[in-house]
Image (cartoon, rainbow, N blue to C red; front, side):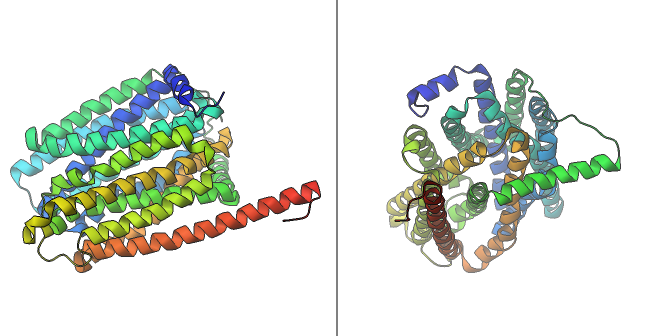
Length: 453
């Protein structure tokens, strides 16, 4: 059976265990995105600085560098269901703490430094919890579905990941802030975490790949060797390593776009910070549509070729966003200086946002599938941890200076520089793909005793 036809999706939707983890992903990511963007709105309103927004994203990214290796080790040694239930349960408590603290800080108008420090700490804790949930979820999918259904399964997860971003960013964040306030939106996120915990709890318990032993120094050395084994496997398998780098690129660009979007809306266009989602929502729609098409027809194109096309598309979209924003350092916001440009400029921003979303899906889905297909079950959790570590380790350095550069030179100029860097990376990726293809043909010819063409 062709698993990438509509029958592949039907088979997945008849799999109750897959549906349970799928719903948990939708609900928990909706809550996470909504709560996180509410915090960005608050900080943009308080500081009006991309550098402070970058600090929030840094606090969100740092736990992946510090904890991903440990998380991958634990995922391979502890039942994944237990990890997911515990992670979502802890998110309920941290989300409630965030809602209580945000209400206390806003109503009592405490000093800005204390406000920002408290938000950074909570963001760090919430992200630390996620470092255990995400690799457990990623490693659980291949245990719940057949191997021939991995591509449509990843497509569904990408579709709903995007849908949860749209729901969280467009409904929970802007509409929630305007109607039920910051606290109301954050308490809705807490309720969603409770629902996600229930969804994960009904999944059958998986078997431990390795027994957990805690017998002192020898076990610590053994654990370190297992972490090294995961990294060695990921780095020495070139197809996996390139796919991990591509996933890291998407993650980094997502963080950059999240950091710059409120400032782009407020300082470049002249909208309210929370209205960023109204011009950038097509990015989610693009990911949604591209995910459907890839799940249906992606098998017709090589996975590495798809990812390469996505990288060039991403660069083009960022060039477009730079041009639509005026191309230079913003002085007077565009819509205030030239109100007649509102319809045309907003349309272009939405178009290039759509292209960004499409490109992200075209990179992410085939790369994620390559990693899952080429990784053994007993190593998958650690390789997933390598993915999250790389994504955040490579994303943190840009976060340290992109925000300041955006404040100094303007968001459109910084966006253009990012586009140029993506083109260079895409060219390197394409060169590697050509080389790898030639090497594969040479090995094939050598095995079959034929002369190279």
